[in-house]
Length: 122
Image (cartoon, rainbow, N blue to C red; front, side, top):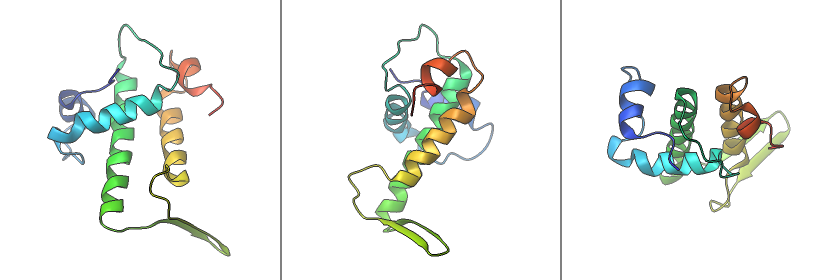
């Protein structure tokens, strides 16, 4: 189940901003984001706007991560003496995973979908 389409992304989510994801590629990234959000495979009769917005946000995270990987940007984190580099491109970058989890919580906490998508021990 794909939670958001290119029309929603362009006309509702962006609210006049320039798209980050090319519209012709949006369904691919939306499907990836929808699958990530909906790991329990919950079936919804109607997709609320906040879930569509969440999907668009996560699709942009995935798209930007892919663009960074293509340009050779390394996913790394450095704070003081602590430093981590992520070399294995086949696995989801832990920093990206944390950003996605945070985005899900931001968009879905306190909504009717909170228990289905947020409170799952992720």
